[in-house]
Length: 357
Image (cartoon, rainbow, N blue to C red; front, side, top):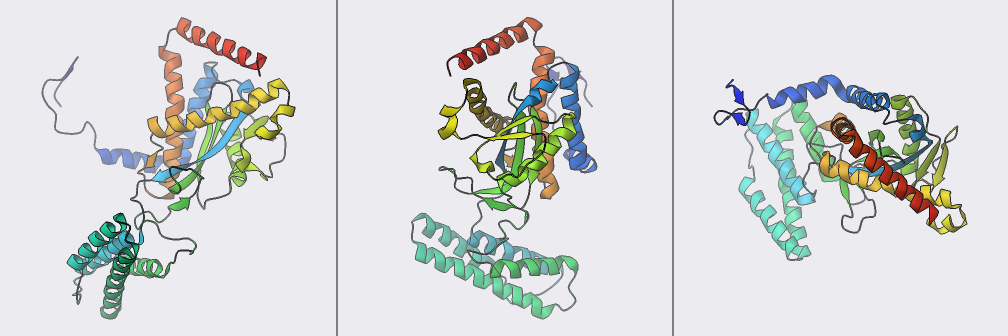
């Protein structure tokens, strides 16, 4: 290793400082439970420095978002093409002589399908999609005829091909990606992005100071209200304190949570009948939205590249760790008088808002 100077290395380095695969092995050793323990230690650090107190859990905000998987937008044509390609590669590796691989014909059909769809010529695009499905079916049947004793990997590909060819528009548990079969199609009602492909993530933040108190990935596309109980249990497990009042949006109606925690479903139609202090905390629920935005843009929850369901859980937890780490860095590196200045400003703004609600 070349010695490093103040301004960097003495000359250009071609190698990585560490092997990238070592990070993969490190994540696998820790798992989701180990990463959750890391988030717990960050919250304990905030508690020891006096930045996180029990009063922060008097009022918390809860919401869900979608953590998208790093996959291409799924279409039937792409899936048929990739599945046929995977079967052809598997046959070549095992020395199986196929009658025809349809490599060039499938590539031409896929190119035409995307061009027709772009030009909004949907009948022609549908014809190319059916042709790709025919190519896949021929390769699939050719392998089944010529191989009797199939190994586990080949049988898995054949089963996946059968499932892909059988699925329809209204089928349940559809395949949206061949390498990430845990991906789900989630609709959150966004105008600019009607469908998102990944998994749902539940997030809990403190209404004061926006600390991330809990974050976890949920698979199976559950109803928002059904995730509330698990999210609150995670908060108690990480902080050791139970949230007293929870503020959620209308998507959590019918949550069924009972016990020492009071759940407020924010409804602005009935807000005029509430007291001014209550209206303030109802409006404060929206503070969780920019936290989600920062976690996606700054902490890599926008697009998850980690493998499997375990990777979804790890990536969500690491995003929460990164968000809390940024808050702690401000505590450690900013001078005390700057922190006190912003704290006074926040107090003045909060008092001003309560006075004029």
